[in-house]
Image (cartoon, rainbow, N blue to C red; front, side, top):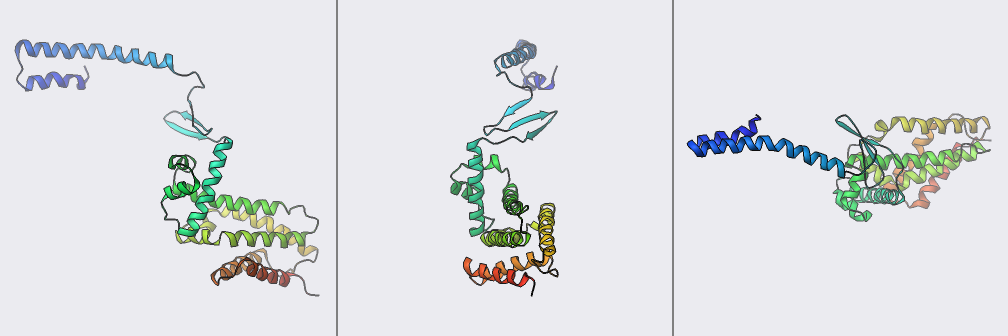
Length: 263
């Protein structure tokens, strides 16, 4: 007999209930022990009979993902988001970028949800932790830089392609300077945490630069790292001094002019 069901009988004995009343109490306990397993079994059968028919070991979330159970663990199987879920995802990212850039990364997460126009529960379904939200923001920015670079990969003029990408890169850096400053102040080491993605971007940029060097459209003594550091340093310094976007791009054009080969 399970210990949990013996306890009521022992308790009655300790309270001094003896004779007929004690015997009846023990009989009642034995009856409960006998009946409960049958009740549990019947409830289980009813639940199985009324459960919705669907794939075994799968539970659908309200935004299109499938949770697949393997043993005791539950894993999230990636799946294309529905249109409404994708819209919420993008709204949250935009609101988070703006909020963190203006108020810092310590801002409460419910403020981000409010500015995105979604519930806190919806935000957490997309980003279970604040760190996951940080990561999504950085990855989104890197994807935009990669997309801009990809658009110039097959350009017939590698020199123009390289300088066009540098301007687009400068725009990305300038627009999100406050955001990345906030992430850095929060102790997020973007270079270390996203080294692989950054390495791919740098390698592809370097191939474009080398093609421009072979066409004598950019000076050979300026490495890709030199150019990127010049762009980032200029954007940061100009932003700190209060230059507007036109002033910053004037400085970028000066850098580009200096990268062209001298006659």
